[in-house]
Image 1 (cartoon, rainbow, N blue to C red):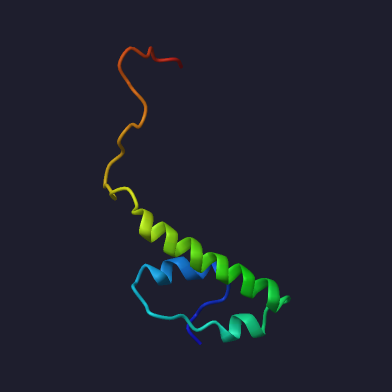
Image 2: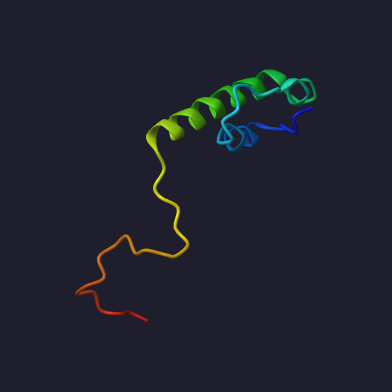
Amino acid sequence: DAGIGSAVDIPPVMELGVDGILTNTALAEAKDPVKMAVAMKYATIAGRLAYLAGRMPKRTYAVPSSPTGGVPFKG
């Protein structure tokens, strides 16, 4: 068992650069194995597309994404 219990577990594992993911137990023990298989398919596709799109750089500090000049503070 690879520790994959649901579709949400797939993208973080893909970020490790694996060539494959074992999902047998997660599918076999799911309440609806067919729906779980479809969810895992889409999670895999989403993970790959996100990788190809390229994420924004990780930072250790916050950077404003909106202009800060000329905007009065409203409290």
